[in-house]
Length: 324
Ligand code: UDP
Ligand code: MG
Image (cartoon, rainbow, N blue to C red):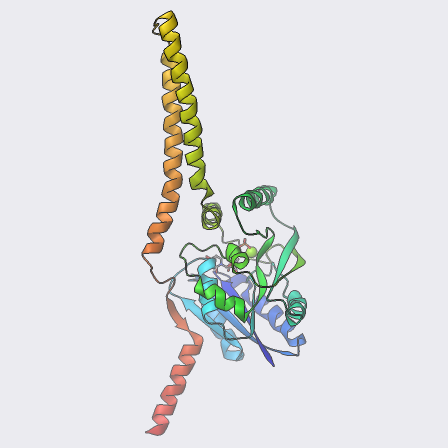
């Protein structure tokens, strides 16, 4: 029987995780041809999420959990999961029930048909503000303009990945992760299916606005270096204008003599160029900051507790005491 790991990153999901677990197990019970594991990654929750996971583990052999040493963010939490997946395929799903587990069956069918990456796109989102919808639409259009690879806008992390894809993803070990971009980058055979996103069943979205902005920047900087190049072009064009203006002034002075007007235009020119220079420095800084972080080559996460390791430990302890 094929082994499928369901990967669930969870950060402060105490309010909903029971419901999630029930729904997961119900859906999986109906899929008779597969053996399921549930791998929860507790991303440094400060509420009772971990206790709930331990409870699940007690009553259900198939549950595994990784408890990270602090909150690392969803991107890293997923990587921690990838590193520990042993199944033939994995399905990533959020803990908040915004994505229907009922899609598993369809995903698995496409996987059996030979696809390696079956991703579900959101059709219409309920319970989301128009600004968030609009911003994400504009953002993905921009991203596609600067990216060489195809960007899959409405495709999130809700997807089935063959072990080939998981293996590939674990080799990409950048700190500033933008996993949505990585799925496209690694390639493999992709299949798109659709679902209607549900509003969060309980609890709150963990993304703060500032974090969304950071993720958006990570997306662009990880996809392309075009923002760096833009400034060479802007600089070139401005120098060209400045040079033309210089010649114009030179001829004017030679022909008509000097006059001491032009104070305002000088100030305007200086401020304009100063602004451009600061922006371009900022863009360089964004990239340099990322280079700095990557060159440190720090481990991406630390594990406080991994349920399977504990089990192995207990087993080997038992074996040892048995041998004595
Ligand atoms: N999540 C996580 N670490 C974080 C933030 C979120 O593991 O630092 C998990 C969260 O528990 C959920 C998933 O990532 O399972 C998606 O988070 P959320 O629903 O808050 O994001 P949204 O659906 O609003 O994009
Ligand atoms: Mg959500």
